[in-house]
Amino acid sequence: MASPGDKVLAGVITAAHGIKGEVKLRSFTAEPEAIGSYGPLTTARGESLEIEKLKVQKDGFIAMLKGVRDRNRAEALKGAELFLWRAQLPEPEDDEVYMHDLIGVTALSPAGEKFGTVVAVPNFGAGDLLEIRREGIAETVLVPFAETYVPRIDLAKRELTLDLPETYLDEAEPDER
Image 1 (cartoon, one colour):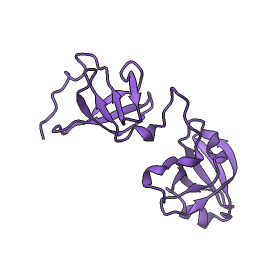
Image 2: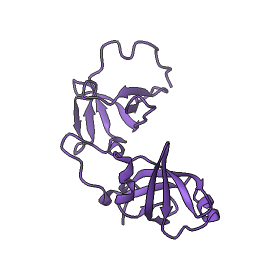
Image 3: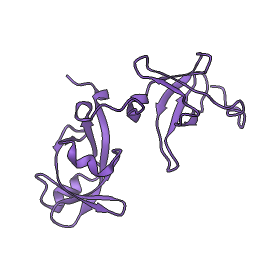
Image 4: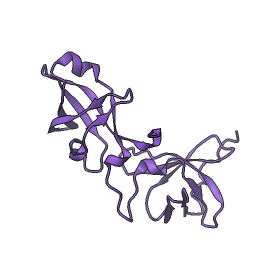
């Protein structure tokens, strides 16, 4: 049986489009148009959806889904997150990682001391960030996900090394829990 970690968020249905069952879709895959080529997608409720046709739109795609042929059915899918099973994805290249694989990884200092744990990998438009929770400190720390700041990742050991500038954490003293 597959574990929840075996599912990868690939996209979301944002709205119905027209009267023939088309939906507006936002893709989170590295190549957004590839979302239609991986095979069936699964919703959080376990429903299988297959993309038959994909048209580029300004802020995403218009998709025709197999078995969805009217607006009511398309409306019912609004907000549905679309997942792929990990086995549907190609293995990453040597210098690549899937962002979801970083969740739960231990972040270490260059000296090998525990800094915290990666809890999310947000992207607010300027690039990917690692959100790291440190023990005993309420605020999380955001670190740019770039080789300068993250020179080593070892997914087999579930750890990465951070190389932060000396003054990186000086701006605001975090609140103690």
